[in-house]
Length: 139
Image (cartoon, rainbow, N blue to C red):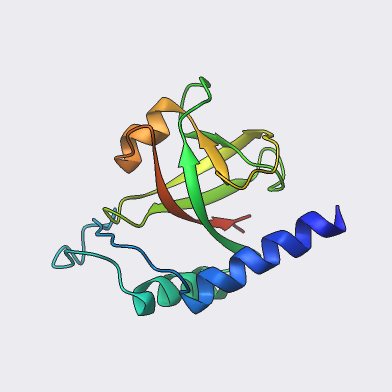
């Protein structure tokens, strides 16, 4: 379990630094700042990560989300986030953001960090997968 938390800490550090940033664009769910278009910059990812930490999230993670689960609603499975807790997921390609309930576990993987339900994937604008930021657990 210690190694898993070390792994998640490293992922969070990578997200905070903005290392290996890929092209992305977004759409804020609160619609108060829709002038953002195009890829998220390293600074925007760092700012979002810091905002989540300042809001009480204990960890911020970056990685690939896949749509492999079939649970209804805005739900997701994650290897370490406590079951029944809330997590904020942001698609860094289109800036869509949702809060999901963690309902199960997946194995730790180098190719994905979270599995989302079809409703979550649709709300995030994900096809079969995409790069996301995860802040959890939320207060």
